[in-house]
Length: 372
Image (cartoon, rainbow, N blue to C red; front, side, top):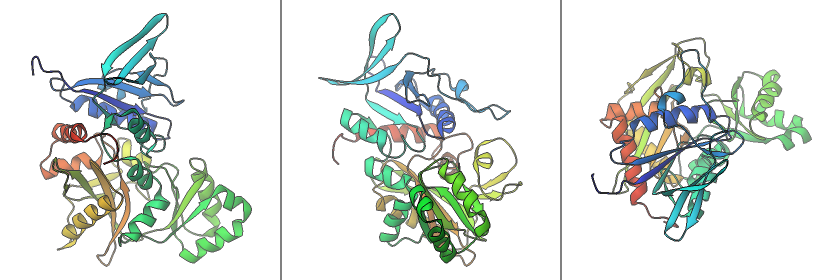
């Protein structure tokens, strides 16, 4: 591409949520996969206190090590900001004792942020206001999919099967805990208590009876003032399906993959997902009864369209003991770590990791800014 300006890609990662470290690991994988001959890549980290900095482009610094140490953004690096100018949006870097330096126009942002203040429509709204193209879902789809309570409302309204649940706020729990206990009894135990707007299984616990409800809510409320109490899908298989837009805008699906817990973990928690151990087995593709895979792939597209998804999503299902399907949740920015299911499913479908990243960038670059 000699003589042809390369699109400038800002990979934004880290953030203020409890999934900061996982975002950093995802960024390391994405940075390693982007073709430097086709794109000019700028790594931008968001520290846990919200500072934006020009980060290192070394993917090795962002990997999980064998001891389970988690990477993080170095907030002491040079501050960086997006500045709206006449011809577009520039990246401006500030350093102590030096005048601000303009790195040039940003063509597209790849926000590999997980959880609140990143995957929930907040950064998407900022990028919309700045007039910058970006990878992935827009403001509404991101916000709805991040909030498990509203996600269920939208999916159920679209006719998709979801598990029974109730939503509990810290205010409702403080005002009338007996009413919350009554409502929990009505949907039945065992149930899962989850932060409503969390991810990576952080703050989730399985509550087997009413005696464990207080502790489960206390843990969830450490991460979110709103919690979801959801009936446990006892005996169900956990199977996921990837959705990826084609360049013509249509939605394609990957082969499904199954997660099987093989270690001491009762469910697919944070350690089982990300820390190196033999806690899980991944079947890619999943072995499913006749007709179930086709139905799952169809439901995955329906879920994607119900929330107004763009670019990519991972739709998680429960295959119930009777063979029926229930949509567990939809993730608009699924993990891209080496252990993540989304890239593994697409690799098994014939789309390798670098091609997957390039597809997402090309989709974002061809998409206009503003309402669409």
